[in-house]
Image 1 (cartoon, rainbow, N blue to C red):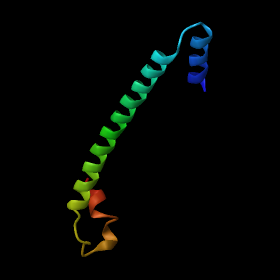
Image 2 (image 1 turned 90 degrees about the vertical axis):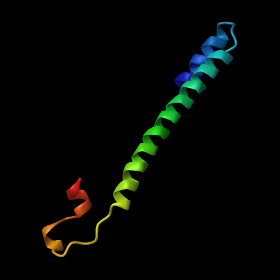
Image 3 (image 1 turned 45 degrees about the vertical axis):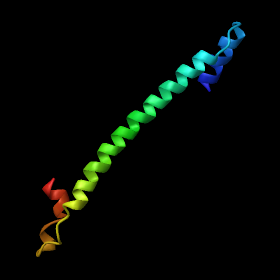
Image 4 (image 1 turned 60 degrees about the horizontal axis):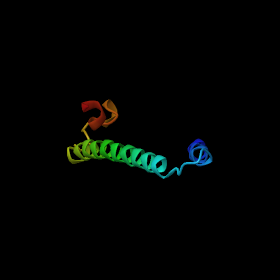
Length: 71
């Protein structure tokens, strides 16, 4: 909502807000790209955990989950 007000203020000042809008959109795209990178890293880490999954231990009462305890 504050971004819309900012764009309207630019317009009310006699300018077109197009450049301001473009910059905001580019910033949002950059933030999304950063989130995607973080999610890809997390996905890779989780995939590693799953691929290294061990079988259930012989004495399951002595452990909660070997994968959790190993890491």
